[in-house]
Length: 142
Image 1: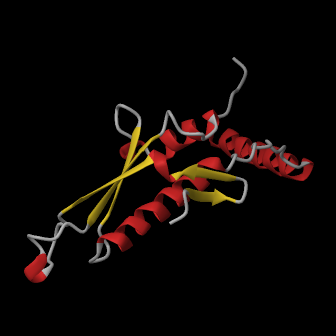
Image 2: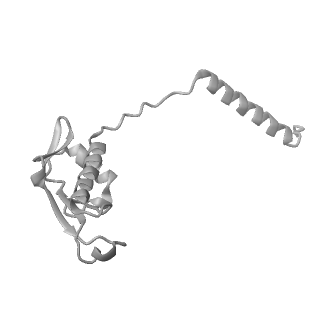
Image 3: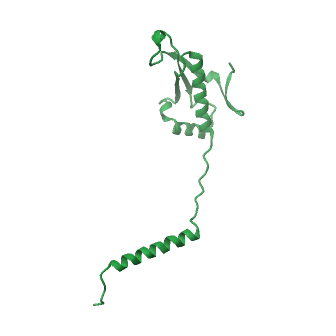
């Protein structure tokens, strides 16, 4: 296994920062369900990580249910029946989450309505106003 979890070609996380434990999986599993610990639990300290601060903030914003009060990211993997596959599944989940957090959101550029749309809107308002005006009782100028 490589000593780093590669996120992008220019950014990786040391595997020494990631801690794994194994527990019993939930759900059906046959004869081994109560004696084999194949569910992988990944624990990673987000505040102490080399991730940029703005990416850490986005990570917390996107995935609040995966971050504990102490700041640890806790992921579980139990899709497979053996622990190494579940461990790799956790690492892949973490990699995808970090990739999403590293993406800087595009700045929204507000647009202006076109002249034609403004003209059509004002014409429609005038037409609507005239229709309402015709419904009023006549004013005889008392």
